[in-house]
Length: 425
Image (cartoon, rainbow, N blue to C red):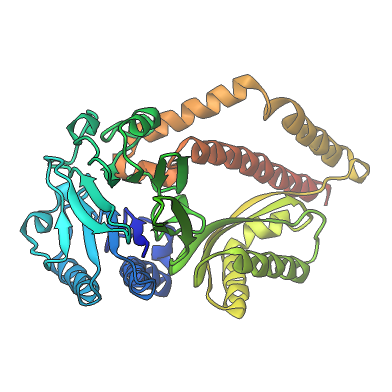
């Protein structure tokens, strides 16, 4: 018989919502309960697949605010696994280390929580008698600026060795290092599979040995966009690994851009949005789709879209309601109005100004530097926990800057145009 385990991390049970989803009470309730429901699905998967183990590579909890209700829910799920004969191996991550519940909670006997000593634990055996051993080290404090790799024991000889580590890997310029470790150093340690946690984006960094970051199984806001998953791992009698990505999230956040260029009728715009949302809903691997919609392009509707933004948001949510299990988190505009040179000298000048902005200003190095300096100054005034809402990584920051540029340029021209029309009237 093979040895099978489910690898997950970063559930952040009952994480508080730091999202525009708070504006909609029903949506907020859906997102608030999604982490618990996703854990239930993870347990369901382990039971239905007759897995030997569930491996959790840190951050079951979401810090110091963890309640006893969260702890009791977690224990109940562990007992379900115990009844099915499934063992659970857990390391504490940086968020778990902040929780008083973490230190006080008593798990059922099937759950092993690693301490800081790195002692391996026998997890099972293949049909040919080859043993499977788990290795893990928990965070004792919320910060771990130094690598934990030197504290891991050597691989158990003639066995399959699986290491659990909560790590930022090589780190990021936007995030503090947590138990930093290079992929090369992990590979050289001699384990057959590294079950990582901490970074919320899934990645299989190596396959000999496997170095796997499963990502967060349930996104919590737009900065954790995309389909989220866990990894089902099978080890056959020859010691070969196979990985199966399983999508279990209740809700998926997505940024959805709708091109409304050339669409000058309100109802035609709504039909275009509906078609794009239906497409996005089909593509997502979750029960519910939560969208941040951006309308983009040159359209005669630009001024009306900006003026009647409240009506637009309400009508787009009605469109989403018609699709079913689809939600609009917020609506953003990156639209500009088509300006004809023939319509008058003033409007022709605006068209020329728009062309200069698009051609010469937005792509310029000086503009980019000034825009980034403005964002940096803004970030410095915000609490640390709020900064990720403006971009959780370099890619998110670049997207924010591009959107700010587009919205600024698109917003000013229609206002100038309406002023010019008023003067001509």
